[in-house]
Image (cartoon, rainbow, N blue to C red):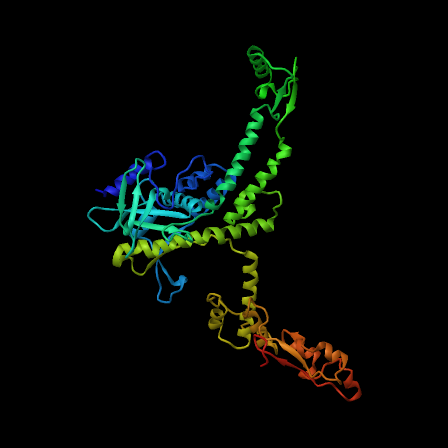
Amino acid sequence: MARTLLGAFLNKASAAAQTPVPFASRSQSYGRGLFGTNRSTTAQLNSMGSVGTLFAIVNRTAKAEAGVEWGLYRKAKSGLKEDRTPVTSHAALDLWNRPNPFYTQSLFVETGAQHKSLTGEWWWVIAYNERSPIPLELWPVRPDRMTPVPDPEQFLAGYMYTSPDGQQIALRREDVILIRTPHPTDPYRGIGPVQALLTDLDAVRYSAEWNRNFFLNSAEPGGLIQVDQRLSDDEFNELRDRWNEQHKGIANAHRVAILEQGQWVDRKFSQRDMQFAELRSIGSEIIREAFGFPKPMTGSVDDVNRANAEAGEVMFARWLCVPDLEAMKDALNHQLLPLYGRTGEGLEFDYVNPVPEDVEKEATQLTARANAVSLLVTAGFEPKGTLSAVGLPEIPFVGRPSNGNAVVAPVPDDWQDSVAGLLDGGFEAAQRWVAVEHDDDHTCGPCREVAGKTYKNRAEAYADYPDGGGYKDCTGAKYGNPCRGHVEKRGRKGEGS
């Protein structure tokens, strides 16, 4: 099957050596050194292999997002997710499961997630069949090879792709899908944490190289040999050669030096003086903070217990993975599916939520819902509607006790309060009772202290205020002059009712 020039060229470009292109947009600039003043998109991509902490964060995030399961669904008229119908056969689903002959969905997503973590941009280039407008392939393209072409009237005219050999190919807007973290000053580009970290990454890398050179230089600080007189060239060369022969290299470390003339003078800081262990630790912490990456997810166990490990896993999935997955879903549903015309209408891609379930919380909520159903049904409400009202699925009735008589629990007087409490705000009491006292010079001490006290239900309130009026410990009542107090029910937000 014939493909467009773009698809064939991207095949060639993907297999080409990853060399910087001699082309720069206003968002790119190429400098010297690994980082330093070089803050180009290419430098941001290369940073993944420069520092271990950064590699761990980007690699773990990319692999987690690549392992998420996706599906295609037909939307329901109700708008509810649980009413959707799975679609198992569609050209868009086939494309997403196998974006091109060289990329599976997992590899495609992992590659794009790396790009987005490092640069804030993930570019998809769409290849078409020459005879059909239906997308044929999806290709992840390096951000440093893509340049938006602004237009004064249409905002965006298209894009320019620059190949490894410098050849430039113009792309239409419909040929490209861009997922990005919006740049605050450039509406055409994205921004990532690495842009703010390049200086810190340099510091971490330089400290690692200093430690390496420390051991290559015999694990001893450098210094100089000081002599009191000028040496001839022959004497100088002889002293240098003898010193290198006997003391240079790790194998000759810690050998005793014998100087026939001159004295040794230290001139460098030691590792302790430089505190490189602390420097590297601080650098790793700065990197984690920039990504918002929880420490337990890096594999660190020095101050990790089960509770904060599970919290870190939830934080990682909810605040790092889910936003990227939502951006992917948005691109699939609002940019890719419309390319399929009427066959894509009414369909939507969705993913399986990677946030771990809180089993303990689910069990507590299930118990509370079941208790609410029991109280409502016992009070006379219809079972099926009651299950739906508290968010439980319909459960078939399988029979009654062997004696044929249903067991009916007595209905408590405060069943309304109990049910309301289970259904409101995480199953906490919604309607409370409150002690109301008329506070004046004749109010006794016990009544003044109990004023404003709240109760979860009527049973608790009436225990202090028999029949709803008059505090049980009122001292005035003993002498025939009771305080003017009572208990009353208030609404869900605390208003009297």
